[in-house]
Amino acid sequence: MKIGIIGSGIVGQTLAKAFSSEGHTVMLGTRNIAKKEVVDFNMANPQIAIGDFATTAAFGEVLVLATGGAVTLEAITLSGTVNFANKVVIDTTNPIAAAPPVDGVLQYFTGPNESLMERIQQHIPDAWVVKAFNSVGNAAFYKPAFTEGTPTMFIAGNSDTAKATVTTILAAFGWDTADMGKAAAARAIEPLCMLWCIDGFVKNDWYHAFKILRK
Image 1 (cartoon, helix red, strand yellow):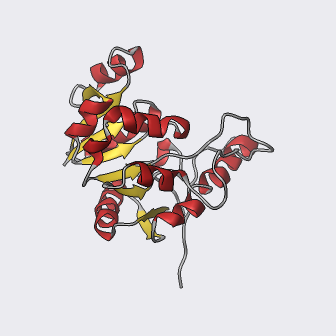
Image 2 (spheres, rainbow, N blue to C red):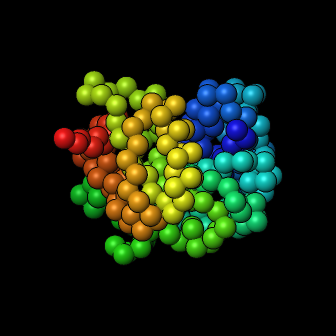
């Protein structure tokens, strides 16, 4: 598939390399294609194209939102909302506030009865948004290696077809998938980032993941 990744930070770069490793054609989207980090990435990964947000959004058959949560809606607008219509959009974002963690607990700019994913879906109503990749660090996005077994990625979205596409991607990346239902479930999935980060801030352990167990 053609994969367009909106956001050129470490999350976007890691996913771009992962999709490329799986044989997809990838474009990494950035606000500034002349930015040194982006130029360096392109030199190290010449098989991955670089484009501005709008070019990348138009290019991708599947789009990935890999921006900071506070600027995600702006990035979508810069990308052209029409470019998201009728496409699977993987939402990796978290609504992290511009405030320090409290005893290792991140602060969010959303309330308990809303999620950033729901705001995103409202912003691009003709897209099929699926929450994924938000509850683990980028080091484990692709082919995670844990002695306890295959970790679980929690997803949510209103389209079963879109979630099936994302589940196939996750399986190729080395994950089990737990479908939590419609977009409102992101209200529970997004705070998993808070829980995941506590070990990082308090114990300096940044390589771990969640696993759902069933009888």
